[in-house]
Length: 234
Image 1 (cartoon, rainbow, N blue to C red):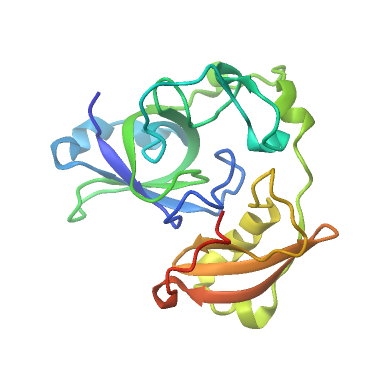
Image 2 (spheres, rainbow, N blue to C red):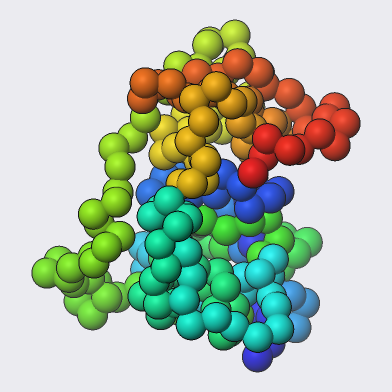
């Protein structure tokens, strides 16, 4: 297996990343190829596809050995399911699969051809093993069932993001930030209404609380001004 590229996203850590790809289309990412694979010929025809599959490595979850069962956070972290019935990063082989929208291909950059994508659920600098086109006639299954995962899906939270704090973010990241927070980035097994949480996103730490179905942003701080205090980012 060879790493062919890395993705650049606004998520410097795992915390806060959407639980699946495609949930927030406003999240931008750039797939930058390793030097050996910076070939425009290798991308010939890809511009005709609206979506692509990214096959990637759970680079922060590589470990020796494996467990046949895991505790999905969406089930509160206290129920075990078979690892092959989940999308847990802790697998015999740490491989992930994401469907993202291909916004455009940029040629002639100092980094070679770059894929601009939307809706990625990957941490910044995640290694990419392969890229394949998404085929609606083969990959879309409207009749598919979603097992236990569908039963625990919750409605989006209402987000109270004061305009003065929202204005601190880059304009092209504001809508994505609001939608990201509406997905409730807290771990499924940590739902303390009195606790302040923080999501590192787009160079800022977004601090918030959640009570009665409303997420309230209380602080926005540039990450380069943080003192390493990250205990709430978990």
